[in-house]
Image (tube, rainbow, N blue to C red; front, side, top):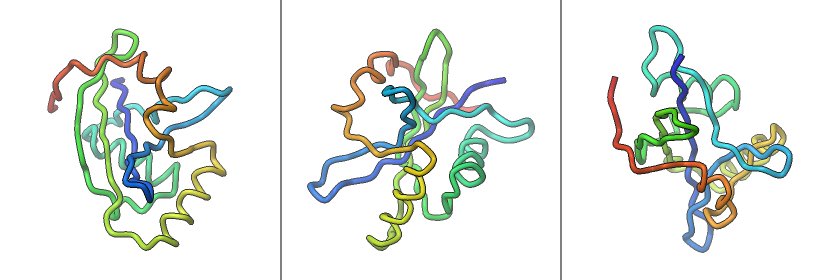
Amino acid sequence: MKQIAGTIMLIDRAGAPKFLVNKAANQYHLIMTEQKTALTPLASVLGLFKNQLGIDVTDLRLDELSNVVIQDKNISLFIFEWGTLATTQVSENIVALQAHGYTFEHPKELRSLLKQIDMSGVPHFN
């Protein structure tokens, strides 16, 4: 099955972007899922966010779609941004995600993760 990656971009109070990633054994990982039968890649990643992370996907806005190469595999990477959420809603979501091993990090903290990703690909739609 085809693997798909997704993240949510959050702009911090200083105006800098942070990205939702999984942290395990002091390493950051993209949030990955496999494309479900009879679902598009977009529907598969939204299903992951909704069913496994408990995120209200109606609050997400697709910001960017890229094709990345990780370990010689072409992977669609969906980058979402939360729509208009109150500060308390954002805080509650962050706390709930942290309880499951997810965190929002600035790109400078994700250097080791980003070195593993070739972002020279172009999106492919299927």
